[in-house]
Amino acid sequence: DAGVTQSPTHLIKTRGQHVTLRCSPISGHKSVSWYQQVLGQGPQFIFQYYEKEERGRGNFPDRFSARQFPNYSSELNVNALLLGDSALYLCASSLSDRDIQYFGAGTRLSVL
Amino acid sequence: KNEVEQSPQNLTAQEGEFITINCSYSVGISALHWLQQHPGGGIVSLFMLSSGKKKHGRLIATINIQEKHSSLHITASHPRDSAVYICAVYNYGQNFVFGPGTRLSVLP
Image 1 (tube, one colour):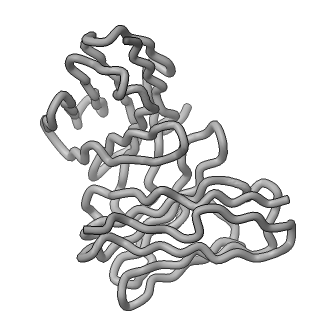
Image 2 (tube, rainbow over the protein chains, first blue to last red):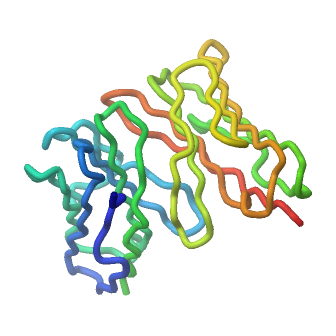
Image 3 (cartoon, rainbow over the protein chains, first blue to last red):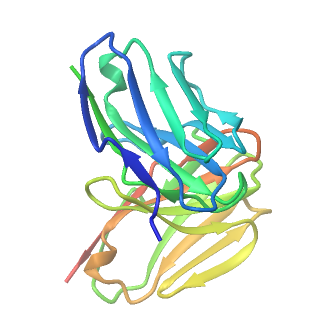
């Protein structure tokens, strides 16, 4: 059975551009969470979605948005990219918003 | 003061040693996760705890809700256990807060 899959694995963008990152949860999981991990630091929570509704939001600017689709996959969108947005973006899925989370391998975003 | 703290920050052990990593938190939680992150970024969920103790193979995790403290133990440590171990707390409807991580190196 496939784990959490994220695409793309690597991405290079320039300042001011926007980016869309994608996540497919483990089959049967209805909750998806997004995290940002800047090099050398621990992950920071961005969003959690459950049953297509936002259940939690971290301390990130409005340039960050996300959504969850009827098949429970999710997209993370970041507008007006800044150099500081360069990070590993991790997606995790869980059965519900209260269950153990399983992480994907992440998308490494570089903003030049 | 960070909401989630871990100790030690760095730990070097010899293969076979018993290892303990501690996590203390200052907020009310509904669950606590222990995560393992290998070089290159991959994160593996080890445990989710809301009370008591869980065991999986050589790993044991305990939590004391009253004392707001959790421990991760590794018995008979092995070089493949070398990774960063992260404690993360979750309060339903609020943020998922991560500790700073403990970098473990197990030497052969």
